[in-house]
Image 1 (tube, rainbow, N blue to C red):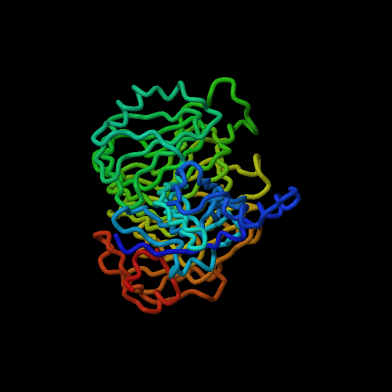
Image 2 (image 1 turned 120 degrees about the vertical axis):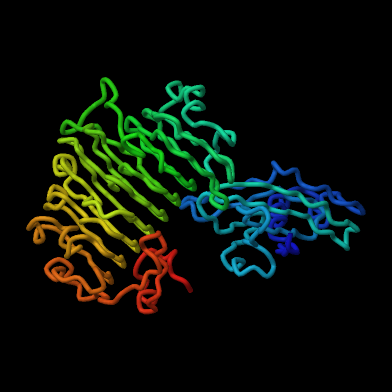
Length: 470
């Protein structure tokens, strides 16, 4: 491990509070308060559990507090991000660029944090020459922003493992997380129903595990977060990767739909040869508040579609695909989204559909219907590549039918490139005037390599940024 960097914090500010409190005591002696009676000794290391760490109100920083170490001349503190234990990254240290973001206030310190990250804090009380005290040993304190999870052993079949775990006995009022081991290999031999649990299934973001899919995942409206996993779907026989089972008996419905209040989020996952929809409502009348896919690569085959709705009273409020690549490896006439219900105005007065920094390849078109394009809809299409679609006019089919004038349209910096030339027919839909009508020069789209060769595309940040070779 690289040499530990240091942050020296004077103990004076912390001890001044004790001085103030003690100054009302008759016979007060300043030196005695600062020393706490500790002289000519090796300072004791703080117990790890006495160093308290918690998120601040906004969740952007960790606040560290610790008790006074009597007789200390100060403190030495280093904080590392240890997502990759073999490559710790200094978050707080003497020469750390992040030091400017730390606040020192007596025995309290804060440092910036990220979601789903692990940290190690090294704490040492410094010696005090005046009192004859020498420094303490180092205390190591581990902390993570990850939701505590039940670990599923490497090599497990997730169907068999969850059957034995009995998800139907889990408290549905609390979020529940399950974790696959780093670099592990798993199978899914049949359907796993998450029920009404708000459930997180995660891998390791540095060394993702792989799940070989035969079955798929379903829920009954609890919401789900799936992240940091690679899915091999070539042999999948299930009708969807993720979707719904029957609405829970006795559930309260709104406009004949059962609302899914918690998000459905798929993040930092890769899908190889997915032959069925990534999401399919299975003909069930659910109203999904939030569906988000970020930092993913989704390869679709056969009749696979990214999102499919067929329930007459099903709906989706806010839909976002960001920093992702979604592509077809065949020329079948498949839509990106197949929407049959989507009467969101029965549930919400406004909804949104957003594509940001994405690369899309070889779909027939983006939509099959106008049900998603109506009053109250905001459409955001920014910095995306639409490459070799089977129909000309990709922007038109993000906005099907003639419902252009009754919604908010936010287009910016997109490329529509088809069969070696800029597409036509987008001007009535993408009216931003910011289109880059140039070949992004993707390396080998037919084999899933979308590395961008056009420097203008990279300079304007168009497409999934993982393919910017810079």
